[in-house]
Image (cartoon, rainbow, N blue to C red; front, side, top):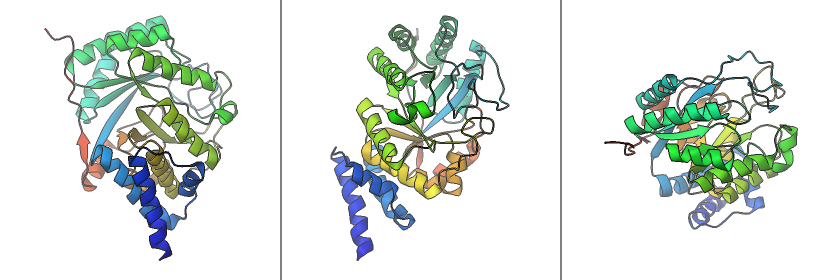
Length: 338
């Protein structure tokens, strides 16, 4: 009887999420801190919300690392930062032809969104011009959504990206406001929020998420979900720390797979209508439980991340097929057609 009552509690949270009600901090903690035996009932409830808004469709995204290393920021999790000794490849901004070729690869992987990501505090004028030139060619020849992630923006640069055809801009809050300075001091939490707001004002879809496993408390994880709801991010990447050797956060324990699943369910309950993307660290932290994540999340990256390897594209496609889910491929109209 106790198990039935507990299961009913999670379904009640699902109903309230669908009705637009915000769950309390205590309820959010009860999800994260639930016994492992409750993971299946929690995912069942999260899937009820996910299915209500997204059915069984899965959005695929592909990243291209447009500029690697050479970053002056001191983010403790990042292998490309100035405080990292990780042996990562370093190169300046990729040329237009390489960026366009990456978009063609995204299409071959059945990705609906192509993510142009670059290290650095923010784009220089020359880098911005290069992205704009590539985006204009991509959007005129391929039905892809373009997401840019180029660091901190000004209002003017955000408008230029939107006018060029960038659909979405990503800038993660990464962690809790009160934990931010334990992770980086070279920019502020508000710098990140301001960039998302500039993107929204310019007319781009806002994308912002978190990295779980950097020393934050469970209470802060719930409050991070609240912060993303307040920010009204359309897309929420949920990363689980991949503690790369040579970074200040090296050696941190991975998030336990069952807890990672509960955190994804929490994100769905608090941000029911949003694209929840299980992102970096998926393979390392969830391991064999990766398919279960899609009962809460409705989006993944296919292929490698910035400096870490992902699961093979073939395995991701098989995972989605074996779940009985369906890849949602982009069908955007082409721009600038004669």
